[in-house]
Structure formats: structure tokens, C-alpha cells
Length: 322
Image (cartoon, rainbow, N blue to C red; front, side):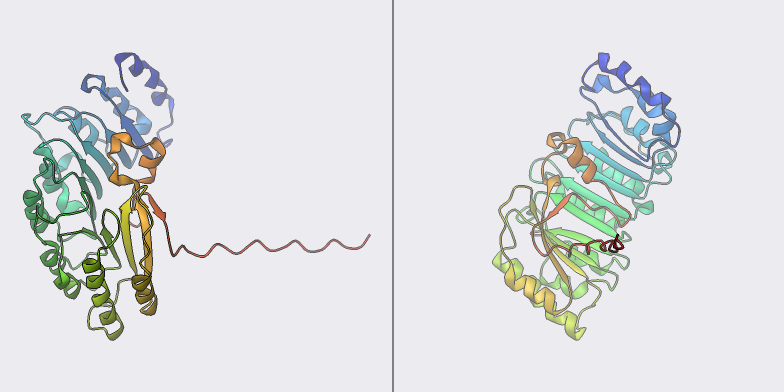
């Protein structure tokens, strides 16, 4: 919503049946146009998946967390009151399991406080941030190591290079994450030691980069693959996915694709629209960014190695002769 005049246009929400929505996306700007009555509509209070984009305050955020059935939450922090006394206790959303947090041009301390508060009950966490601008990457390394090693899904996106600003903390993270099934890494977050420490639970490995896997990174992944055949490393990985920003040119990784095929691993080269700040995404793109039943999967466009098309429907039987 952009003005006070828009608030009355949402009165129809209160006419929806309580079971009329499963997911709700609420955008507002500026801060004073946030209308708490929108989240009090019976159908909205019953949703399990909430996506919110707008200036945050110590009053607005608790209202977004107060939906009693909330299981999946997507929040963007790009304009927030950094000096506010934030109350983000986990009791506000006791059923929250999947959390997508987008942090842009703010040092808002509530970002790490939110993750720390809800981490014990989460199975999936997706942090999308501009780490090179204002986001405290070292604090996030510490928070993830201290509170995130029980996660089944950990996705890091935003800046596609951690190099020169952070440390390869994921080497130690995966060693302490026995339930991890899905991880997305960025350049600089891991070394070759990472692959020898993967838990047996890991099924999907994703590598996010600006244009494609560099020669050194590709060699690092290639050196890991033969170990799967000999069981030198844990052999549960089913998918390796290279992720580039939407609109990036396709870069062929034939050697990597063939090596994956030899050991029975699915290889994908995809575009991810979440590299764009959320406020510039279309409604359709944001909806595609939402979680599915397998965890926090973003709006991928597969550029290579697509699944086979479904078989055509059977032909009808011939008509009897007239």
C-alpha cells in the first residue's frame, strides 16, 4: 500500500472465509501505511505462509509474527528503525519452521536477533543479504555456527562472493550439521576440505556465483566427485546446482556435467531471481521464491540438463466402422 487511501481498498479481505488463503503477500510503503487490521482478517490469520515487504518497526514486526498458524515467513529488511527496542521472542510464532530473511541497506540488529530467536525451531533458513554493504558478515558466521547446525536446509544468497570479507566457515559448519540435506554456498565460504566433511544426510549442493564456476572452484568440485564412486566421501549427494543471477549468460560446464553424470548425480545450471532486491521483483517472481514442501527453493530457471518431458497421452481407440 502506498497511501492511507489504499487502506479501505483491502476491506474485502475480511469477507474471505477463514480457510480461503494458504499464503499471503503484504507490501506497504511508507511506514505509516502499514495497516494492522489487514493481518487481523480471519483468512489472513489462518495462513501458514506470510511474505512481507515494507519498512519495519518494533510495532510492525510483532504484528507480522502473530499469525497463529504461521509456518513459513519471508521478511525483507531494507528500512528499519535501528535504535528501536525490538521484541522478537520465539513465542510470537511457535510453529515457524521455514524462514527467508532478506537484508539490504541497513544495519538493523533485529536481523540476527530474529534468526537467533527462532533458530531452535527452524528446519530451513535462507539468508539473502548484501554483505559487502552494511550487513555484518562476521556476526552472521558466528550466529550460524552457534545456532544453525541443526538445520536441514541452509541457503546463502545475495552477494555471490564471500571472499575478502568473510572466512570459509562452512568447512566447519557441515562437520557439525548431521541433519543437513540442502546447502547453498558462495565463493569464499568453503575450501576443498568442505567436501570431505559432508554429512551423510546431504542431498543437494548448490554453488552461487556471478557468472559461472571459476576454474579453481570447478576443479574443487571435480576433485570431490570421484570420491562418491569409491565411497571415499559420503555418497548421498543427488544434485549439484550452479546458480547465477537472473539474466546472466549461459556458460557451459561440460566437464562438470559429464563428471556428475558418471557418478549418477544430477547437474543443473540455473538462474535465480532472488539475486535482485525484492522490491524490484514482480509479484509473480516473489511468489515463485516461496518455500515448497521440500524446503526453501527459489525461483529457478533451469538452463541445462532439464528433466525429460512427460509422455504424451495415449491415443483414443479407433472408431468402429460405420
